[in-house]
Amino acid sequence: MNRKISIILISILFASCAELQPFIDQYALTQPQPLTNSDVSHGLKEALKIGSQNASNILSKQNGFYKDELVKILLPPEAQTISKNIKLIPGGNELVEKVVLRLNRAAEDAVSQAAPIFVSAITEMTIADAFGILKGEDNAATVYLQNKTYNKLQDLFMPKVKASLDKKLVANLSTNESWHILTQNYNTVAGSFAGKLANLETVNTQLDQYVTNKALSALFLKVAEEEKLIRKDPLKRVNDILKRVFGELDK
Image 1 (cartoon, rainbow, N blue to C red):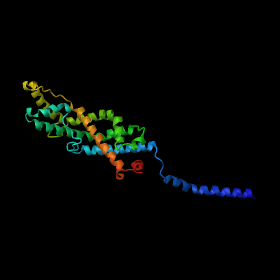
Image 2 (image 1 turned 90 degrees about the horizontal axis):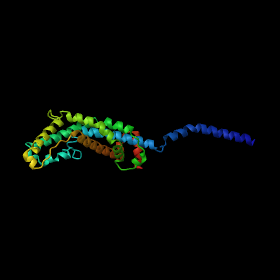
Image 3 (image 1 turned 45 degrees about the vertical axis):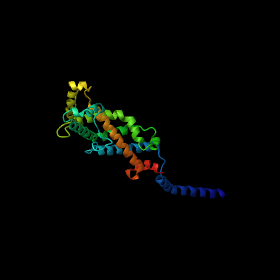
Image 4 (image 1 turned 90 degrees about the vertical axis):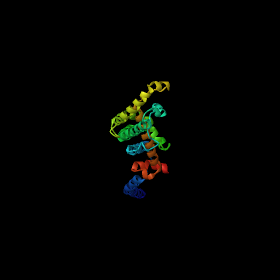
């Protein structure tokens, strides 16, 4: 008799569990799951993709470089001697300002094509210590991206910069042409008897490497600003993975 009762009780218990299982499964699905390193890596990459796209949009606008004192491109360091001796060049101040304007216009034009290059590098990047980066400084993911991909980005981005330097972006004159006019005028003075007496040295800087480095530095600066916004402002977390991963920082 007792054995029959036990069998009945066990049957009822198993039947109840079977009926409850769908509810248990549904409950489990609705509960937050612990973040894995893969989840965090995905979230960091997504933040960098969005950050690079936003950075490219900001800098590619007219005056994105030229009117932003943090990223405005001035004459290369090797050409600072031109500014110091500007009074020796007829119309020197105007020539320098035209070159500076065109340098920044070329950078603005080049970065308009930067986002796909950045996104490709981010997609291929392996983030080993994702949790460490998530819990790091406000720009930790951007710094990691820069350290891991800078040389590759430089190689891919430089052709875009070269093309922009050759475009006639202002008054039917390219940046390279404007630069040639400025340096040719200065080098004429530097090569003169008076220039030699003043120990002036000629300037032969190639702009493509200089502008590429400046443009990349500006892009990383803006990506870092976007990363900080995503970390600090829940409204900037525009999709589920960003909300889930960076929501950890709000706890």
